[in-house]
Image (cartoon, rainbow, N blue to C red; front, side):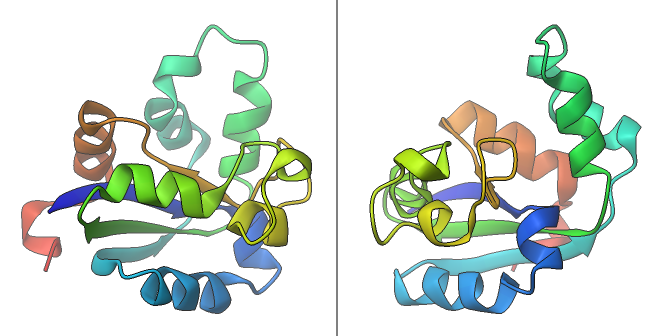
Amino acid sequence: MERTFAVIKPDAFAAGHAGRILARIHEAGFTLIGMKKIWLSEVQAGGFYHVHRDKPFFADLTGFMSSAPCVTLVLEAPQAIRRWRELMGATDPGKADEGTLRREFGTSIGRNALHGSDAPDTAAFEIGYFFSGMELL
């Protein structure tokens, strides 16, 4: 079993898609280990996306992620990281495959509805950033 970190971003949450996304996660065979609705500050968003600090889109990204509530998730399944990324689809919803969550719920590369860890070390950092061990069931 493997764990991964996921976020239902502010755009998808505000549009009322969280329930449908959670249903798809369940249907895909993931176990929900942790879930929180939070509203990040810009500083918290900056800490989460620290690897992008020197990129030109950093300010837009942290501004967007702190603009409204989101839902953070810890998912568990065999090969959870790969499977979650496949279910999400390509970062650009316009290039995402039919049937993926970003294709269905994303509106642009900057408003793509979801986040997912890309590797085990990233997942470990991201899960630890948002959840204590006592919160993971």
